[in-house]
Image 1 (cartoon, rainbow over the protein chains, first blue to last red):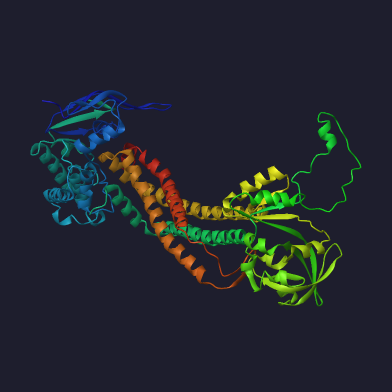
Image 2 (cartoon, chains in turn brown, orange):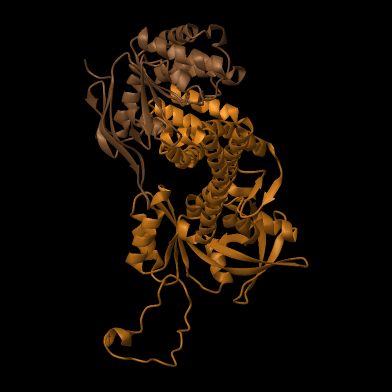
Length: 223
Length: 416
């Protein structure tokens, strides 16, 4: 079976008078439908690895394969197109556009992709929000929702283009325990029920323990 | 129908920062409106002046002067030698266009032009206790009516009266008002030659050009020659063309052929036309300055929006928005301010022009008019609109480009 994401000998070093190595010697394969938690102490390179896996950043050495496709050497626009169609991001902060309602926020990636008509986009936005228990909040602005609700809207937005891979960077960092558990339950469901690949960075070992696999990073290396 | 995504985001951004957006809009609108108002007023005045000049004055004038004095024969005889001439005295001769008859004959053979010989000079006009200095032009009425619109400008009297009256004189309205002269009044005319002549005012004209109305008089050519003590002398040949655009070319070719200084109406009015160029430069600079200030406003609004929306830019890029998509959002914002400002400015500008058009007052400068002379043309709207949109887009482009190059990793790291 083709891996959903594969990091082969990946390293990322920030240039400068004193080069800083964020991650190095990363060999990681994540299978389709697998829920992986990346853990490690602060500064261990968890988020850096996630950004590399999500094609937001480019490795200085090694390569990243997304669903079997080598992404090395792709242009910025080509990487953006891959992210749009195949990857959904969820961040610690929800990053919803504050001027748009929940449904409009969810619709944005679909409108950018342009594969669905206006009616289908509206319907899918509402379905996604409903599936995350937010049906009655679809017209609300982000400021009118709680932190947990906003984060679920962000998850709905990440799912908008039906991506094969969901990447989450400390998605429960700003949430209370109950909301955090709900978010992780959602991720597990996305992986196990819908066959999506989920990679979540977290410092919460209890939540990480609910994942299929944990990848522990120390000083930029997988240990 | 839903707006395109980039446009929808841009609209929300602008609505979110309503006060700053309105300030920028006001700046652009005022720039556009002032341009339309000022351009309409200034070009109205300029075009009116030019039209009056073209109507009232000859299009080409041959003068009894040389653009460069002819070289002394000794310089021609010894071109490579060092020659010094001293103690030269000018010839004491009666000035005038030599061979005027032949020049007129040659010109009359050319199609599309009318020719009139004249003798121009100065006089002192005395009426009662009032003295007025003036220019006198000796004319042949039968030719003059085809070269200038003096006959049409007469508010009293007639051009043919110059033939029928013993010593007829046509004066400008300004002279008549200044000295209190009316039709059929007898005035004393003294020329620099010392000749004194009693003349009868047989016409008063109003050209609308202040200088002409205040200083010009006309007499029969023969009478003017007597006054100037220059019998049979013509010192100006005045030409009117069917196609006024040919004036400069004809002036050049006539001067090249006959040697006499020949001036087109543009050259004769070059000092005033030069002022128009300066006026236009001032107008464009003023409006440009207003638009630049407006651009700073737009730049400021969009830079502020970008600063505030840095996180949004990060998430949009992480979602899969390309650099061009991000750039487009912010350029749309500038473009919208430009287009809206242009539309409001057009309406304001139209209002300003109509308001100025409704004002009635006596104005006397280069020309005499009642109220503003306005020139209404769609070109002013097109130019001002293009300037507004170009300036707004440029003002938005710079911060938009910066926004599009933001690294999403830096943004999400910074916000985390």
